[in-house]
Length: 50
Image (cartoon, rainbow, N blue to C red; front, side, top):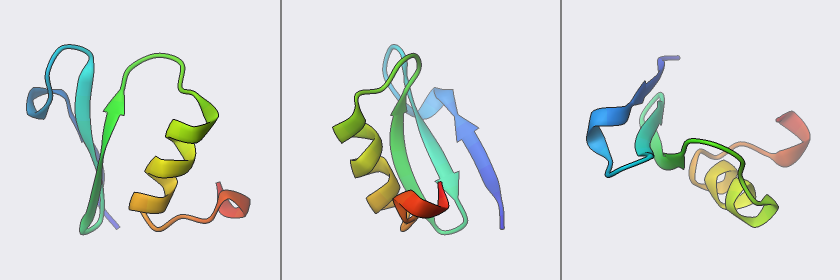
């Protein structure tokens, strides 16, 4: 499965994280718990597997 981060696909400190066919917006730096949960949901990753 391909995993890559493309900082050119976002504004400022944001970029796109690709995990296979799925993607989510990532902010560089510390993440709040709710933000992380939303990102995992978009990538179809269970919290237990993270």
